[in-house]
Image (cartoon, rainbow, N blue to C red; front, side):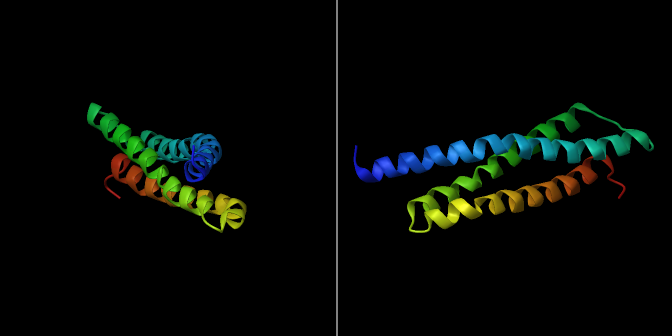
Length: 118
């Protein structure tokens, strides 16, 4: 195996080892945001959940997880660059910024789904 392939494989393995356990936290936070909106709607005038609502939530969950994969677009080149040591120290910031961004998007989408009158 060439050195480039070996380096790529190591970067990919390290990236998966880092990012995939955090995907659980990411999904739990987004689920909590959606659950809060659903609970508020249920406590208000009433929550109407149709099969279309379930389909939309499933679609958004899949899209959120596809968006999570964008971390690898930054992770792999950063690890293969001369900035690997610095990247490994600050990639938690990329996770936090991405998580906050995704939670804000989940907030607005959930508002539209569960409280379209707002």
